[in-house]
Length: 564
Ligand code: GLC
Ligand code: CA
Image (cartoon, rainbow, N blue to C red):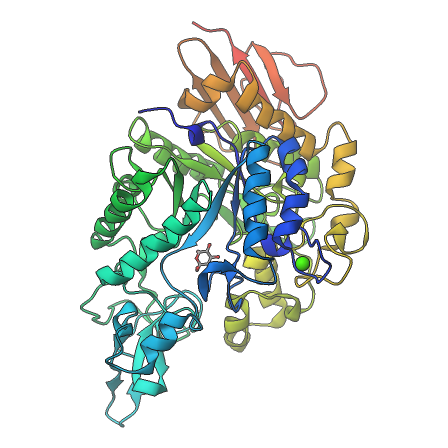
């Protein structure tokens, strides 16, 4: 393993739409990000991943690209993108873009050509199939495969009386990676941005580039939408790796860039190694979603409401599976959430009773695990899930497409409760900069409604408090990047401590010089744990440390053990 710059980096994901609105039209923009670069620099991160800002009709907030070579006017101009890259570089911050290879918008010029006739030269840039006709003569999709965002994986197109494949929304037709010409086009996109100065990519939805080209029906039982949710038909298929290897050889290997593929759910270690082993000729890292949903819903006898209880042992098992499995073979990214997941403090912490404690505990774990950590904007101040009471406040394409169907099967109250816990909008609310109206994000009503706790939870306030979550993140990032523990925290080995403990996530990071133990209580109550002798490096409670003390709710202790 050769040491690369991105191994010791700390990443920060920015959702441009709701980060900062510089021109007060209610939508975040590139100039807004530029204005916040000093804040980002002060936080201590040196790598930003910015969500897509290409031209887009915004069906899926920019993941539906209509022109890969330009910036959407709501975000700014190409010159703003150039300025953002150069201003970030001045502050020693690398810039990573979101590269969307799996699909385009249906408003992309290629698709408009492709759909225009069966013999159009771009026909084969997308995946077209004839429908099936049932006994009554009704036209049906080519097979029963389901999509992630709405119903079938196919959408009918009148112009040529065929269906195109789309595993996300109807407005996001899938590209045909089986076509070498299309692959060259996508490599051209990647080179264009690398030549413009970006330092790499987070590669979107990468697990899906290859499909089962027999297009046979899935044997799985159908959902309420009448489709088979059989992701194996278009996820992690072996042919995919030949495309990725080609992308690596023709493009990525020619640049000193960093790539992290979004692999999603369901990939096992073997696939993980295919995506991100050092010698895989693929990506540098791969995000999976395995650790994102480790909660049970249980009835809280005190409030008589359902609440989350974290499956701490499962969480440890999952982290350990990937860390052990990739050990010496490849590098991992670490993260608690991204723009597709609930807020981590609402998922695994307790924002109501232990906001500061649970927020800083979660940050401590993220920033001391092996691999490159990625903080999601707002996580550093403990932003929470939404408090929306009107279903129309949700914007996500998934919600828009599915709410009607959900309401046929459940009450509004239950559906709202589910959305407030699981919807992707939870992570997409305006960044809470201050207690000014609209959370200081904009001077006008934002595209996405703000959360009302911004008067309490905001950057300005936390910058002024010495024990805030934000200050904890700053300290922990510093510890990882610049302290005497940097080497052991970035490159040291990992070992779970008391893996069977039900409540505490504890592990050692060690090398030949140092051994550091991270002890994190994931419960809102006091817990017994064998706290050892050593030198305290970081805690989130101000109190005297002694061997054998009980851990307070969400307490975290980072301690250097005597080296043997
Ligand atoms: C990825 C993105 C998600 C998007 C999808 C389709 O999963 O993270 O936000 O909707 O791909 O591009
Ligand atoms: Ca704006």
